[in-house]
Structure formats: structure tokens, C-alpha cells
Length: 95
Image (cartoon, rainbow, N blue to C red; front, side, top):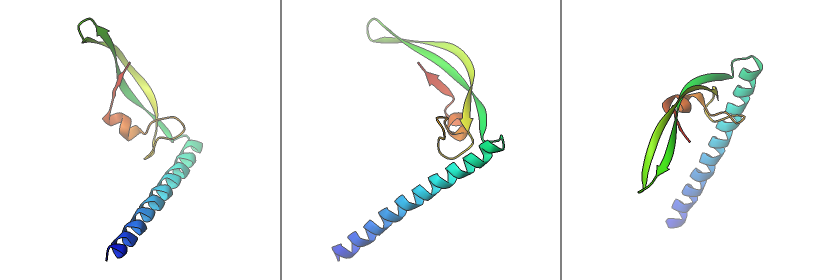
């Protein structure tokens, strides 16, 4: 009985890996198509902060301002640019 469950579990893991690979390859293909037509990248406004260590295990946070970051309009990060949906949900950058 355990062998049957392990067999099904192994098939499920393989199917999940194959589905993720197909999704990533498809996403990269759509990104390449969009980039060739000029709509593959966007910009998101990001707030930058500087964290400075002080004496006594204290930290000072200083705002550096906002900048426009280039991002890819895709599910996964492509060509070194983060995905726009992720960057829009995490618009804070720490240095």
C-alpha cells in the first residue's frame, strides 16, 4: 500500500516540476515577444531607504527618495529585471 502512495507521490512531484518548467519557458517566450514589440518592460516607483548601524545595537533609517525601476511584465523575473507585479507589491528598497 505504501508503495502505491509513493508511486503516486513521485508522479505528482514530476508533474509539478514539468508544469513549472513549461510555465517558465512559456513566460520567457511571451516576454521575448513583448520585448520585440516594445511592451515587455515597464517601470515602478520604488522608495529607497538607508539603514545605518549605530552604537548600542541601534539602527537609523534614512529615506533616500524615490526612483523609477525597470521591471519585466511577466510572471517570473526576466533578463535581470524583477517582475512588475512583485515590484509593485514590494516598493521598498533597503541599502
